[in-house]
Image (tube, rainbow, N blue to C red):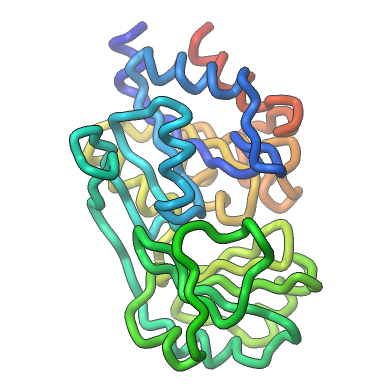
Length: 268
């Protein structure tokens, strides 16, 4: 069993998949992740979170070796307990955020913008709601948001909805980038061609895992590419219908520990 599991790559989203919507993780989920990792399977965290928000979860899970995909695929880490922060950055993909920021400016009342600073935090146009961004958050003039290449731009409104932002994307016509709207009025914009799937494919090749031995579990629009990429794509029960159609199967809701059922299938 150990030899067989070592040939598998299991990519797991965090928020809405492993973590409840209040940010907590059930003991059953943590235990199931640890049990699967201990079999030798390549458990890869694949999240929209930045490094500073991902590594505490990785530490809580007890994952010291392997890989993690952050910022929707723009940043890939190799976990290494001998490194000062417990990881080494393998790859970053950036883009010029200026054209996108110009399109977004003034497009939605009360919207705020964040530009990710790798391993540090975010530059923001105005304060975000408490608890939504981790790391060092600096309020800067609008012109400073686009002074350097970025891995990700986040556009957020405390009053809008996901439907509002889907309509906004259609109206302004984002081109030359990859984007995903969250379950609230939250829009993540990444370099063109970059997604969790693009980063996971690089990890798969590094690990020499066969495509048929890949599994991915997620719940949101930024998981669509990786669900389609994996030989076994599993959507959470709380996923929108437009996400579920890209999955091979649907498990229970995150509040019902649907991820545990998926992970236990590897241990049966």
